[in-house]
Image 1 (cartoon, rainbow, N blue to C red):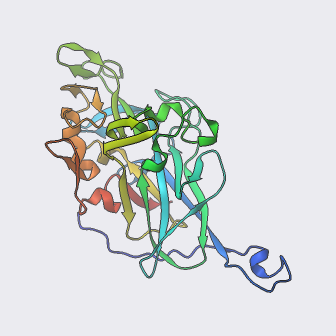
Image 2: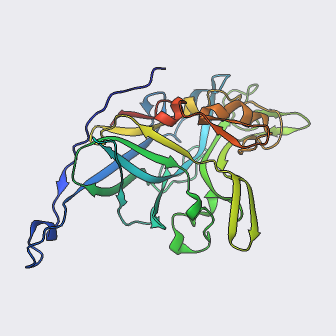
Image 3: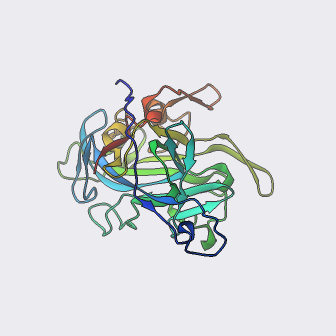
Length: 320
């Protein structure tokens, strides 16, 4: 797939603060105006957005093009930024809500693409599908973010509500490893029982499983001294859109593209699905989808040319 080189200018509505307009004091010094930013996310199959991804089975997933029910789809987005015409990245100042956190120079938002009421195999989601904030007024031509939680925040106490949204225990990897950067769970249709979404994953030497897990988090993590964590595998990913206008576009998470290399009806070893282990056959199948390969030592080898990192496969721009 050729890389898009379109540079759609982002011209957002400018919000003039009272103080910025000279109405907030007698100093005569005007502060810079800012403009609002609103970036929407949606689950999708190809370029078709799913208004209710939990309501009905998803079609044509994985190498077997099977039907599957969505069970979970959440992920963290950190350090969202816009790129101006000079090629300078400008970080979005996040608005204040329980799904946004700004600390230590980093920003994090939790995106939850489940339906807001329990449907099918999904529990109810929290409805947070939009990141809002502001940037200095200007013209911006591109957008980017990091999929996952930066190490500066990855190991904060999940029991402390002041760390929201990193206090979400469902998104915990473990205390040492930190958070799940991405959590996708699907239940494939049983090959022998049409319409059944239980027991559809065969396993050698074990009972059939129901849920294919894709949990992306850091691995090889240790705590050599109390509170000081080190992870040999940082499984965040930097994603950049070469042209993006949030007034007319949103970010789609294409589940077909994410699972394109996965056989959802077979687990050949270790955890069912892929939990970022370099020795797991299912991870070996799908790691290139995330723009990397595993080396012999299990460390990531990132391919900077991979289309995943350029917003052209799993995360892609589609019309609102």
